[in-house]
Length: 104
Ligand SMILES: [Zn+2]
Image 1 (cartoon, rainbow, N blue to C red):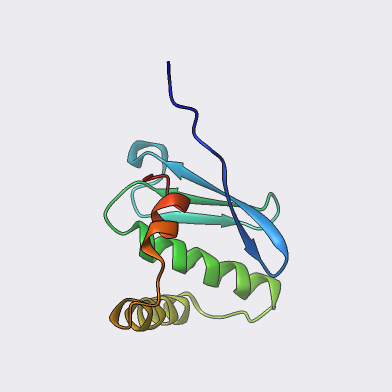
Image 2: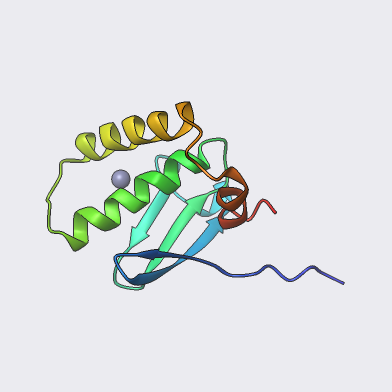
């Protein structure tokens, strides 16, 4: 019997975004993730940088909801900086992150 995959959600500013993991062949080559604010869905491509992608798409959701109009390279810089601080100081709950990313 197939193990049922539990749907994963992230609450962002009170909105409940569903996290969907997609296979590499299901998403354009240049993309690692998509934040769909209309359907409250975050798509994450299955690859080695899923944690970065998750952080990136959270920033994209904030960018849209707060109307920041951040340039994409700024979004990438925030993603890189935030991920480094969280990782270097062990502030990320990796067990929970893996659960959200469907690795548990
Ligand atoms: Zn982006």
